[in-house]
Image 1 (cartoon, each protein chain N blue to C red):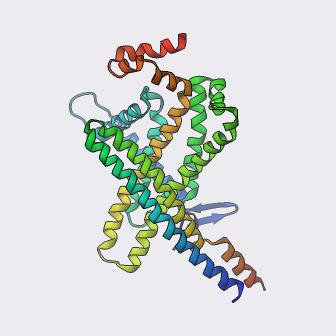
Image 2 (image 1 turned 90 degrees about the vertical axis):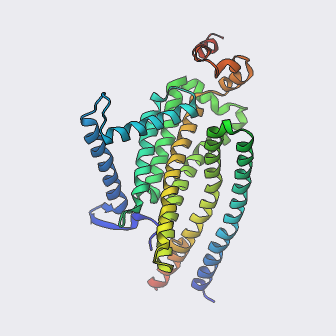
Image 3 (image 1 turned 45 degrees about the vertical axis):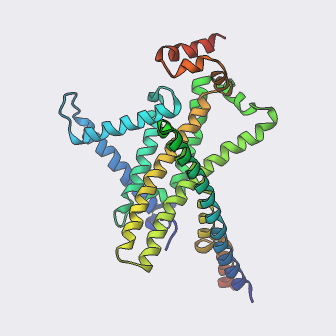
Length: 93
Length: 253
């Protein structure tokens, strides 16, 4: 197995693994946050605007960790610097 | 498939490249500026308003009330900056449904530029409202050992702001492209609707987060602690009279 195949294989596996771990864990975290917010809303409907706004901000904050995973896997698949380097050096030979 | 509109080049000469991000940013700027100019050209104070004036009044009123709720301060100071951020991002994101339009916010260059504006605006507003000494003192706040962490936090939250908007918008266009290849009929419409929703929410999140950062820079740590500890706080929200006298008490002591 030469380095091109190795880099391609590891990149794709890592891209899948990044999303595979990042997305579910983030989803669990978001689920906990939203369920707490629902409880708070049921107990204090008067505070709905504050709770909703805080929930939006909190969920966006949590969501960004999933987005980081997504960005990393997209870079690994579509704009992989190691892959480009290997392809360039192979073309130069 | 390209993950950023930076790679779509329309015109290139010398060191200047005219790529899709730049072109569509100009288009959005043109829409916003010309639209506002056309509407504000003939404003009326009577009971009959034009449709455009109604739209602008609702927008400004909504943004103002949101700013007031979050910061508990006079919204006029923050309205130009926060309102511009929100309107630009929301226009970019919601024009995404037009075929052929590449949202400029789907490029890391645009979002990094917007986040840099926030990065500069936070100390500017902080220093303008409290003075440079009080603002810099905030970095040493719990103890001087926290200085590197405070500086790091300042940088990482700016990076996070840029990556969040970029990732969300990029994922929207990527998902649309992928779904188009798998199930080209009807299903992409639902993904586009979801993309619209995400676009508006992300514009809201970006501007609210910028506002929260700015508001935390303009209000010092002790001020918040004092406001929470003194019994004045109980009446603080009940009547506007004590609200106006409260900061003066803080200044005298």
